[in-house]
Image (cartoon, rainbow, N blue to C red; front, side):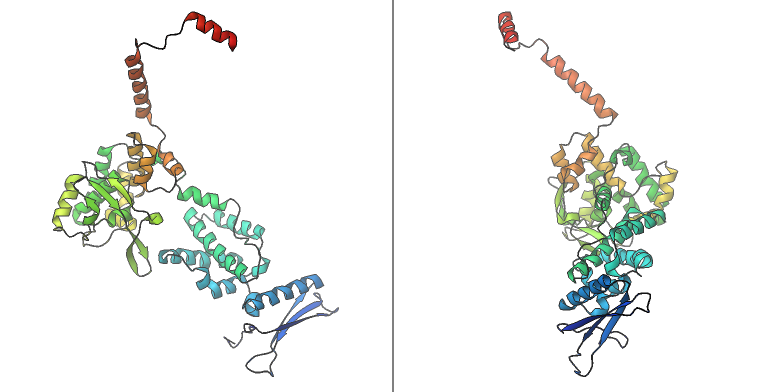
Length: 414
């Protein structure tokens, strides 16, 4: 036994069951399980629970026997969700990236356990899960918070399925996956989040530098680079000198800086796909200077904080007083990630084909990229000019010669 007050059946022991009817009780059916302690044959530990009907008692016994046959202790199989989840969390979190652990555990401790942690695992229904989700939404939880909360709950319930405690996962809420996909795939109008033109991006970069401690120019360079390449801030932080082809002015995006337990780390890009991004002339002088400054060291980082450290979106926000600056410039809606929206929208407006833009953006599906292709007013006017040019160019050109009699015959046939 792992704890003094805990009774668990060891893996592989044979469990005996019985149901006793006690008419003097409000819940008259006592279901009991017993087994022989393999380390001391004289001991027969047991566990019992009272039920209103014999069918409920038998159902409980069946679950206990099934769980024990799979190596799940009796105490664990009949425990509440909070106790069960804490016991199997290491198994439930297998395969997750380290940076995901902290937000998932926050969702578990701050929302799942306080809301439904007292309920038995086998007694949780899809309706209960729906009501729990609605309560978190009513409390004002953000989409990312809800996502992390649901995700950890789903993982714990999946482990309960593997342990034979339940058969279906009630935490897989219908429609919730679509809501997550909406947020992750940026299924809103990215054009509304894009800056108007390069001059506006310049003013933003200069304003952030002016507001930062010691007016560090690197913050402005990072903002311009993100706004001119469509890269995420973590990817900008991950740029090394060897990633830039200064002959063709192409950047091979292959890593990003991200948070993890213990600090910041570098890892592969989102989706673990490397991609090629053009370096436009507006960015080249600064990149050439940064490459030359590191003296040909291919692993040298091109963009850092003022003390040489790695950069994240949170670091950029705090170091530049981002929130105050964007409000003062009239862009109160603007987030750091909107620099990416800006560049991708500009690429689309410039006429970059969707399949090429998808590669530059690193999107997994063309449908995500197509959300940047809604034409702005300038694009619509340009389309009209292009049509006029085409019409003027084709005026007076000889077309296919069709005799009047041929037209008459075709009309009769049709």
